[in-house]
Length: 415
Image (spheres, rainbow, N blue to C red):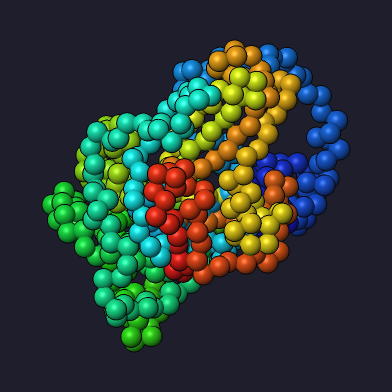
């Protein structure tokens, strides 16, 4: 993307360079201004202050914090699936794919995000962490399939000005049965919302989504496109960074939207002071949320350290893959950790050692969202074709497969 395109970063650069007229005139593009200012920037003296080892600082701080999501998870990929167990980034990317499982399977206990240490002879499948103190929305209320055989396909949506990302995200969500069933049937939320917000004549984001869904269904048979203005008008509520009329990333908008709906539900249920496990039992978390297990194994003493992270999508690296299955294989494969100062510090050896790390599925989400990483750290887009199958089988990545040999963790493509 050229630097002169209309985005907040370009606007800030233009403002910063506006006072400098010796590099470019007002009519010059931002690209020209940046090129003209390169010499001045490169010749500026930068004073550095030496600090201690980054790795040592991390080790000192680690005991004071709970690991919520590992860096590898954020770097490697994203996915949405549908099962009671176990996210290019362009606005219309087909890599953001809600899916539904083709068969049921048993549900392992919910895991926490606290680390667990195991000896070399311990059965790692026995490590289960505390359940939530309070369940806000029972998982058994999630209905995975459509409630009836005749379901309106939904209407098209009018582009309100660079809102392709918004329209495509809404249409994808409105084709996920579990999400639609919850929106249409959560009468308890609707009644409580009307009671609490009626006096101020406000409308929560969940209710706005429900009205948009119903409007889409009602106009489906008439082939009339709708204007999703109820959601468009709440962009700043969804995320302060979103700007009306600007192009945005569809996957980022999906994350912001679900997180904002989650906050709305927690606020309505007065549950903001609950523990993190309980906050992860909202309808949105019960539908889209799952847990990953990270196993770090010391190659010296065979000590195993486990952490559990709540996730709502998987970020898949596609550089060496041609199918989603191949990308999943790479994501869940065992990897060797760094050496030297970046080596893993074993809690049992109390020193830096060679170690490996591997992800497995502890508790899969009811709806799994897969995000294919099409953009690199330098900004280039990988436009290679990736084959998306009609169904996915994640059984071999499920940590509890040995204790449930007859269960299959399978998913089918929904949208």
